[in-house]
Length: 211
Length: 100
Image 1 (cartoon, chains in turn orange, brown):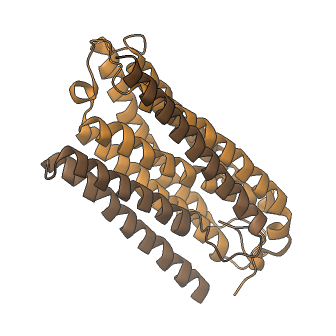
Image 2: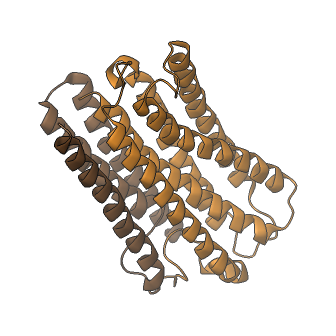
């Protein structure tokens, strides 16, 4: 069994120096993720307080399209699986200190990118429909809290997708293999983390809003 | 090779569990199978279990690693979240009732 330098996703001993060098960086990224979690947590708290503050405007039952939400949830869940497949391909598809990142990693990242874009498409479409119906963030305290929480998650997803495109490009250029391995690991942590935030959002905001 | 198969299996197992834990609350809400309070309870339980499944099978964090201080970071963040969210909701709900 391999020894692990830090909890969670890691390259594994087979990657030698790349594994050891990434220790501090990955731990630092965990610190960022946890502070980001606090940020999301405060927006969840705000949302819970603002839950019934619709100021006479439309509420969750009138505005939410659960079919679209379930499609978004499925897209994000599949993207989490393909993201995991990308990290596994990177760990195992070629032996340890191989000079280039395996191409299969890039292919899994492309699949993940597609699922991510599908998620974003439905989310943006839902937001535009709400805004078109007059339910803008200015309509009520509830709508402001909703836009802040779900919008921040969508913004994170957008950043994550731009990040994937950069990674795919770097893998194609076959440069700086050790650094790229670490970047893919960190991005995978980020992507899995966003899916966990989404569990909170669909449970508290969307499904909770239907009760 | 065997390590790859094990890790591969872990991901697929985690994914299947996550799908089941997602489908249950969505189905209950779509079918309106239970009363509102029971639905809320099921949604809550499924969400917590699914979050644990994601952390365990996708982020690969469990309680057996040597570097416990890194785990402390995650557990301390959870403690802060419980205090922040629980405290906010408690105070604001109490205030809401007193204003009527």
